Image (cartoon, rainbow, N blue to C red; front, side, top):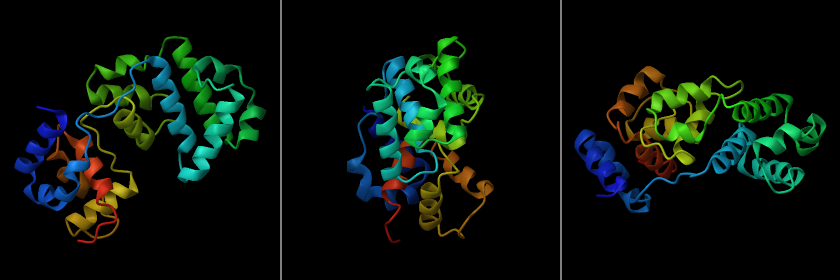
Length: 207
């Protein structure tokens, strides 16, 4: 049984309403979650997420390309450490994001952060290890765990798209508190990442 099949079976049993409402999008789910398989790929993915914080897709892509060019096409921990702050500023990065990138790169180089090891420990422990890094917040950590580590039981209550989709599906008031959303999401565990993918798919659907 694929991960997708196991997730859908669980969602059907645990939350029939959610399963029914999101059914039009079930076929679009990947059989297995995407994941990066090397430390280098994981670092590049995390750096990209930091760059994209609080930016639209087009702006984030533009700045990422500038940073990659400054790194001569290789977005690595060493290339980030060698880059001068002025180069980051010219690429469009804030001082805070520059500090975050350099902090992550430094932690990787001194061995205090092993991104590859995060693939094998419990989700909560992996999230805590990342949240200890300066500048990494819950949203960035959740996106990294979902789309780089391929972790299956991640939910980001701070993602506005997920919140709005849940409010629509369950007919909740706008800006519903975490205390309302988290118990609903807990029903989807241990497949909350697949549930998030379905929520994003249904974001613009009228219920």
